[in-house]
Length: 157
Image 1: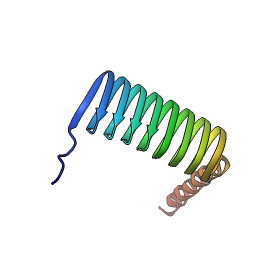
Image 2 (image 1 turned 90 degrees about the horizontal axis):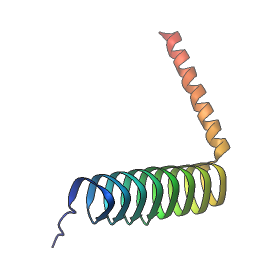
Image 3 (image 1 turned 90 degrees about the vertical axis):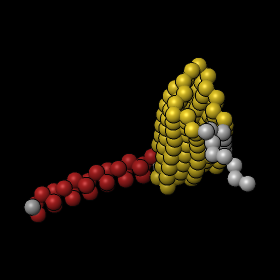
Image 4 (image 1 turned 135 degrees about the vertical axis):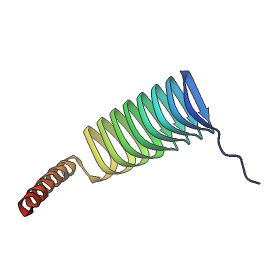
């Protein structure tokens, strides 16, 4: 017997928005609590997600547990047992996380695997393909190679 699909809501707003087992396009609220849901865009003071997929977030405080996070900008981020794409925050506390990019003023990490971690202060158990120096060197090399490619392209015209 197949289960019915989760209800789809185009948008929601209010002081406190609770999303449980649903798919929501856009949420604007002071506080968002999501459980076993999918939210495309969130703009809130505080976001708390458990076993949810959060695609884009703009918030002051973000707490994600056992979920997936596409991208987030926040003042304070706490992610536990999750996967995330890009996180830009003032303070990031990550535990058992797989991430593409983490950019934060302070990063406290425990069992984090990432493509690149850029931070003013990084502490804990982090395995990154690029550290701060390698990311800067990669950016400079990429910029110089694209400049060289443009110059060669103009000369060959």
